[in-house]
Length: 232
Image (cartoon, rainbow, N blue to C red; front, side, top):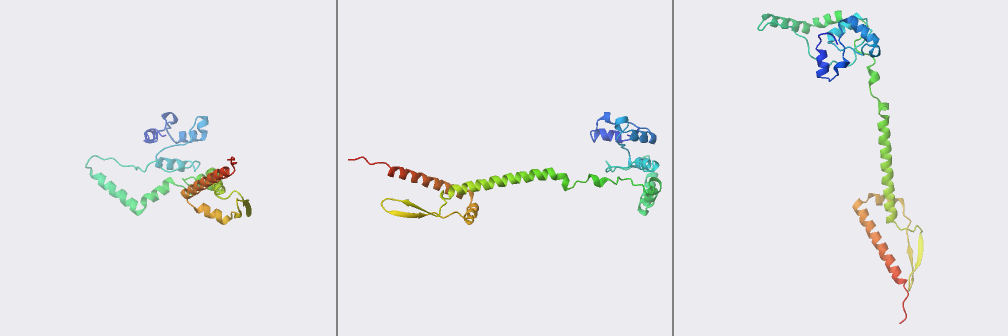
């Protein structure tokens, strides 16, 4: 930071940068020396100063250094006059005329820019994010989706297995006293599975409750029929 620059207090108060990380530099020679040494050899990593001073420094060093990033603030400079001084209005009018007809920009380009010297870094594109920068996020989302789908299909298949008949044979004959009857079990198809998936969760729970209740009744009646009768 340059001696007497407002950037010193701005970095500490507005950006909360530790004062121990800032160095006061006097002139452009110290700027060059500190930047060439770098922070490891007792220099600095970057210079923070007003934009006109920075542009003048770049033009005097033949584009060895570059401006990185955007401006911290858009506050401009001004001229101080005594209160109610007529020079304030005249000077403001003159500056406005120079700005409107382009003379200010031509003065800036003449003294603060040189041909072939770009003040902005041409390596900004290297810091842009691409799809490969988010491969970790995509991987986590893919794994989470795969696990969720696996759990969902396993749960649906488990519920469907409980709901469908346990026997997968096409025809099973069971003797029933006193006559013989034939029960036919239909093999579950993919269409039945899709229809089962389309049902609501409440309907599936009710179906499983009814099936478990009917299974319990069937087992109870079978055990009662199998009990031997005592002779009278």
